[in-house]
Image 1 (spheres, rainbow, N blue to C red):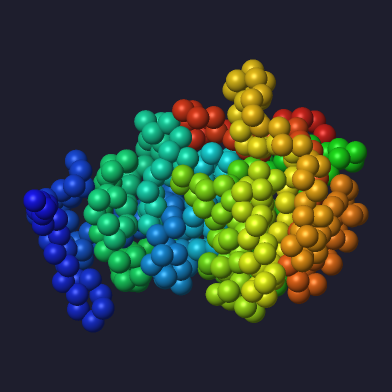
Image 2 (image 1 turned 90 degrees about the horizontal axis):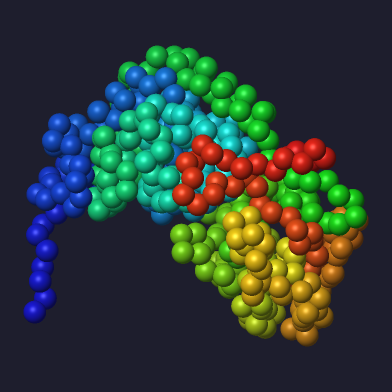
Amino acid sequence: MLRIPPIVHIWKFHAERLERVIMYKALSPGAINVKCPTLKDAIAAAARAVAGADRPILYVGGGALNAHATDELRSLAESARLPVVTTLMAKSAFPESHELHVGWPGMHGPKWSNWALNKADVIVAVGARFDDRVTGKLSAFAPGATIVHLDIDAAEISKIRHADIPVVGPLKSVLIELARVVAGELVEGKTEPWLLQIAAWEEQFPLRYGEDNSVLKPQRVLESLQELTAGRDDMVWTTGVGQHQMWAMQYIQCDRPRTFVTSGGLGTMGYGIPAAVGAKAARPDATVVCIDGDGCFQMTAQELATSVLEDLPIVVVIVNNGYLGMVRQWQDMFFAERFSQVNLTQTLPDYAALARAYGALGFTVENEEELDTALREALASGRTCVVDARVDPREHCFPMIPAGAAATDVLEYSAEETVTA
């Protein structure tokens, strides 16, 4: 017999805007703030918290994209001068060239981003879920912060981190109302010292990697892609899952919503190529680039046939280190270099030859000069292309927060000879 759970909430809509939420049963301890029985009350409480904060921050998750609330998010950030961090799943939800964008929190986010989030006194979570890749050790996450949690799903409120001010409703309308109410309570210039502090951290702790002219560095592959496509408004990026995905997060700049398509959470290796083909089908005018790893590429390389036969050209750039790179990194750093089942080799298969077998263009590059030439030709070709960039297999993805560590305990690349982004 199907058992119907008790009513959790009733929604009353007026002119496409949620006016009131009546809660009958909390889904988790602390999910309901009895002082905010209506959505209007909750938004007012959130506005007071934001306006009264010295170190507020917007912690934006993928829900902002799902809700088509990116314009409203930007309006709130700009009107209140609030710094913004975007999770991996929210990359592109806020323009990354914007002065208020302060990076990406989490296990491979920059130190300045993690410090900004963890040292804030008010965190406004916008469609984010406080997953462990962002929080690190939960008991040590942002211990002094008041949490304002905006989400359409009451089940997400206080599921992981207790929400001091829960706001349950559609993000688009909630952000509009929150910006309106905050505007009436702001003290002009209050967040400027906080923004300057975050900027100082960014200058002090930039992204870094080792300099070695004898081998192509994976970070340089991403930097080259960014340099060659900077300023273009037709780019859509997809990724597989692993080190290359994290480097793409760090080095590819996305200023328009829904231009970065990736698999987060329980990430799916092999996602990049099918996602790129789908993106090209949805946006035939776009230049779609899949940033892939050699392990991920081998899982769905057969979809190059779909790309060629259906005339849906994509560019696949393989960050080929000859390993399951993220697994190798963990085995190197945390398991005393006991490498197991991670060596793929950089030459078998020959990815450029495989691409040509599918009717695509194939390029193999081993240095920066070859890389630049191949990327320019691939991006200009209008055909499905595979660029096999053979990179340093020893390179780790930094910064990194070890599993179980606090999010402020960030490991950085520390060698003397470094390149800074």
